[in-house]
Image 1 (cartoon, rainbow, N blue to C red):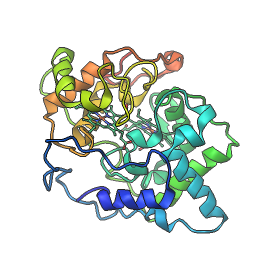
Image 2: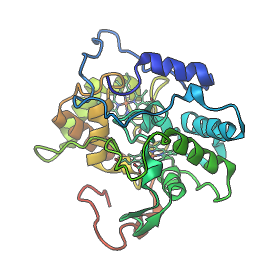
Image 3: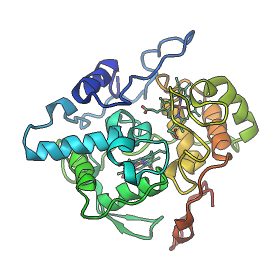
Amino acid sequence: MRGLGMAGIAALCLFTLAAGCVPPPRVAGQPEPAAGAERASGIDPLFLPPSPDTIPGDLRGEAIRLGYLMVVDTRAYGKPYVGNALTCTNCHLDAGLNPNTASFVGISRLYPEYRARAGRKMSLTDRINECVERSMNGKALPPDSTKLAAIVAYIDWLSKNVPSGSTVPWRGIPRITPARPPDPSLGKNVYAKKCVFCHGTEGQGTMAAPPVWGPRSYTIGADMARVGIAASFIKANMPRGWGWTVTDDEAFDAAAYINSQPRPDFPGKVNDWPKGEKPADAPY
Ligand code: HEC
Ligand code: HEC
């Protein structure tokens, strides 16, 4: 099975006792996920991240541990920088250890990297701050911030078993492609049937799940605000605990619905894709 099973998630929770570290809730009446419901292609042999309960006890380990806490409870540990109700691990599931969901494992090997949206080469710290500003509607951490360095230390540590030069085959979210144009009005029904229970009637979130639209959600400049990315995330992971159970059409329609709802603007969007290459699903 790919990703952390319940045992792995429980181990993470034991390790940190961090607030918000809860195993995915189960909806009454829904079946257990079928074996093989996760990504069918099997575990990539290079996906060998160390477990957070083996973080070393020295000074470097302290930084790694702080980085881990920033990722699993960004709102508490990175409070002044976060402008919404989200935490990194809400999207980078299982603290970045889930190979289907923009995993952090191995990505230290890929930076610095040219990024078309910025039109320049970016370091890993630049990329983290992009998510802080766009996905968390927050303020970039200063370049000399210990907390920013800690997130990098955590990602570096998760990447330590991945050889340099690796293309990190599990990078990102496994993309699905639409068979027809996504339809937000059909997505409204999918949302009512399969999402509202956890994410709330106004997309505002509940005790069980974070917001998916509204003032406390990700901004229009976030990667998740692109329908193709949100659909792929939903297909692989939603409802939480039942990845790969919705159809591709349902994933696209639900993504189109939530991304057609109001959410915070991102004024910096005027500077995006300065040299072209804007993807077709960019919302602006
Ligand atoms: C069983 C409860 C549950 C259901 C049902 C559910 N989700 Fe989620 N969803 C979650 C949880 C919990 C998270 C955060 C995951 C984490 O922190 O590990 C999440 C995260 C998300 C996120 C990314 C974080 C955010 O809030 O923006 C999106 C987008 C999302 N869900 C969309 C959907 C859609 C669309 C559906 C219906 C197809 C759905 N979810 C059904 C529990 C659920
Ligand atoms: C609303 C969801 C969301 C939240 C919250 C979020 N991210 Fe992201 N992040 C994404 C998505 C989506 C991508 C792009 C994935 C893709 O292109 O396949 C991404 C990409 C990244 C990347 C680049 C990954 C790569 O393969 O190069 C890094 C690093 C990153 N995020 C760090 C963070 C950190 C650290 C936090 C918390 C401070 C955070 N993100 C919060 C959704 C989110």
